[in-house]
Each structure stands twice: as C-alpha cells, then as structure tokens.
Length: 331
Image 1 (cartoon, rainbow, N blue to C red):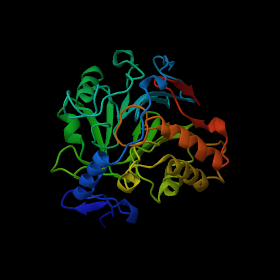
Image 2 (cartoon, rainbow, N blue to C red):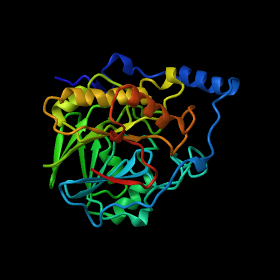
Image 3 (tube, one colour):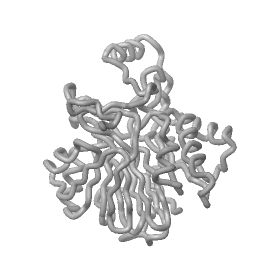
C-alpha cells in the first residue's frame, strides 16, 4: 500500500488538509504586497548575541545531551557519545549563488575549523537554508567516515559531492548508528532547489535515541496533526528542537512554517502523547530564526512571541531555551 505522502510519479506531498501549498499566484501576491504595503521595522543586527561555544571535545559522555547552536537549523548535537550535525550551513548566503539571496546576520556560532570530529549529519530537506552545496563538500572532504542520513531522494545529491556513507529513509523508518537509533519523522513542508523539481525529494524531521536520552529535531515544518504520533513512536523526548521563525505573511507561510504559538502547541502535543510514561519535562529549543531573513516578521520577534506563548501555556520558564549563536547547553 502506497503511503499517503507518496504522490506518485516520483513526487511527495503533505497528506494533511492544512498542508496545501500556495500556487505561483500566491508568490506574486506576496511580492505585490511587499511593494505596496509598509513592512515591519527590522532590528539592528547588534541586538543578536554571539557567545563562545563550550561543547565537549572530542565527544561528550553517552549519558548527556550537549546542544550548541550554529545558527538557523544548524546544531551540533552531542548525544549517545556521538557528534551529530543537523542541516549544516556554513556559507555566507542561503542561496544558489554567492552574490545574492538571504545573507547571514551573524557568523556561524562554531567556526567550521573549530568543529569536533563529526560522526553523523542529518539533513531535513533540500532548501538552500538547510542543504548547502559548499558546506556538504567541505564536510565530506573533512569527515570521509561520517554517516549522512537524508530523506528519500537526496542520496544522489550527497554522493555527487563526496559523501561516502549515505542512508535514505522514509517517514517512520529507523537506522542504527553505534549508540544511537535515528528515526525519520513526518514534517509538513515541501522540497525544491529549482523551478522544475518541486517535491521530487522528501522532507522530514529526525529523532535521536540513546540508552539515556531522546532528542527530536523537527526540521522545517508547518503545524501538523501527528506530533503526538511522533512522540508515541519515538519518544518520550527529553528535548525538542522546534522552528519558531519565517512565518509572515501568515496566509502564505502557514502550510510550511510554524509561528511561535504553533511551535509551543507542537511541544504540548509531543508532551501530552507520552505524559504518563515521561519521567522528565521536555525542554524546547527554539530554532529557525535570527540568522537568515526569509520572511516579513521582525527578525527579533519570534523568541518574544514564543516566550509569551510559553508563559500563557503555564510551562516552566527554565524549559524554554532560546540560545545565542554559539551557545552550548547541557541536558
């Protein structure tokens, strides 16, 4: 039986009613609105903090989770005794060209040459702010033994750029890497790197389970109805990395990017599904904000709205982590 997210003819789709993407006419409407309506004022980049990372070298012990934010959706996760990168982007722009496209507001929180040995790389989908050609080539050359885990259809891209050990997974499938079980989780998004390849590769999130800890990396996603099912299958999670930015205008972005309030609701869905068996609270780490300006909301707005939604939900303040670029925290 063909899974609902397989659209046939080598394409994929969001299987939920609220996952329908805007057509090209929507893109034109958005661009027209940008030309004819005032946009929110943007902060000066100096409002964003960068700190010196303090991750474990060469690796952390298997019983802890150490999280360092590189920026956007790029993290160094030290879990199960392994060093794992998510959606690594070290280029100056999230773009197919070096002279145009969204530019970093801050440099990567870990300099590329300052990375520890990398055991695994997780890719959520093929958009330029999550899958960067130059970074893939640098990592593949620097870490020839690293394992790359990608959603269906992305292995050829990685292999053609030097990655040797690439594993493709479909939603709900798992792979074992030494002390970790890594699961491919559903997400509500889309894929494309050009004008003719939309949805020809899959998109996903990832779960990472060691003997001691469970981590959820949501990837890039709109709010969808199966966060609870993800927790039932792969949880309970000690920490969930959830996107909070790139959400305005809402009429356009709602299918593919959660706003901060939806991210908090996704966290509540994850927690509720395993509340009876979870022994510890679930920490939410905010991501996908403060690095590349992709949409219309003020760049510093997402964490402010996330904090208000978190408080309104009655959740403990200590369990919402809004990291500075380069900041390391240990669970």
